[in-house]
Length: 438
Image 1 (spheres, one colour):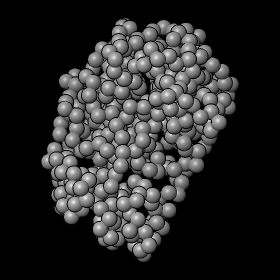
Image 2: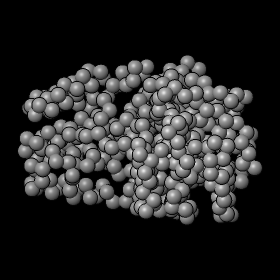
Image 3: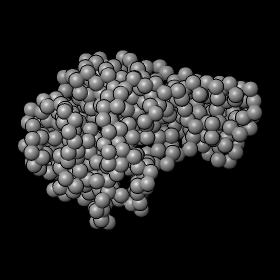
Image 4: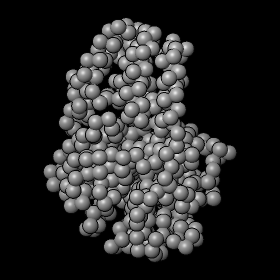
């Protein structure tokens, strides 16, 4: 049965709800999705599993699946308990349904499947699983950052110059790589009180680079009193001079300002992965305003606008893709096409026909093209552009620049301990930035 995955102890993933332990019910301010009844049945099924009443579990979980037929977690749970009951054919049938959706939940090492591992059905499943794990590679290495301790996350490209900016978690700085290939520090370590780098976005019209930043125990110079500190900085693109700094007031809770989206007027929207809300930083202000209150989402991650900027698209790691009407602030879940799972999304970037998204929840990790209708209110198609790249070690958000998508293949956030601050420097390697043609 699905177990809670350990949280990756990095900046933006530090406080995410474990994907596979999330129920199918939305947060209190969201519409029930997909069915509170399915969630209730699943909760009862879990109780039956815990008491080893597997027959009752199967009855309840299959009822939940009937109400929520696209819930991959339910499929996997049924497979695991069928395996516990030595029903190899039934278990593998469910696992094959997941493989058809290109999902690997780790059954190969799950002890629930021990009883069927010597069956022909299981051997057939392993063959098909190996096919799923073959890399799908369309990108090339754009460049590398030679400093292995950089620990890269956010990335942005300046359309005016072709310069690419990359934020560092551990070293608390932002690097700039020019179109000619010259690499330098855009801002130095901890400049102006900069914390661990999270996400970057460029306001070309006003010549500004916006960066979200948060306190992380394994960043250089961390202090206990930094807990919960997070904010948004704006730097002049030419000089690196600080132009604006908006820190979220401390309230004793863990906040983590994350993805950034800038509208045509220069107003900045930023997700709070720690408290799962969204804030607004108006162009003429240095104070963050609440746009969607904390817990308005389950685990707010990526942000992007629709073409007409009337809708804010939100990637929620635990529940999928949402469209928020900017006028009413009303959220609406965007249903994925049949056979497509959109949980576990990290960053999303606007592309001409929709979005480019890095999906890190399911295995193998991948990059998706999510096509939308012009208002951004309906998903029309989802395509896997790249999957299981050999350089992946925590792929993370990216940026569309020209006719390509640039993203960090190996954020290596698992090298830092979010509780103790320990950092496995001996395992660190240079950050790899990939260029994926669109």
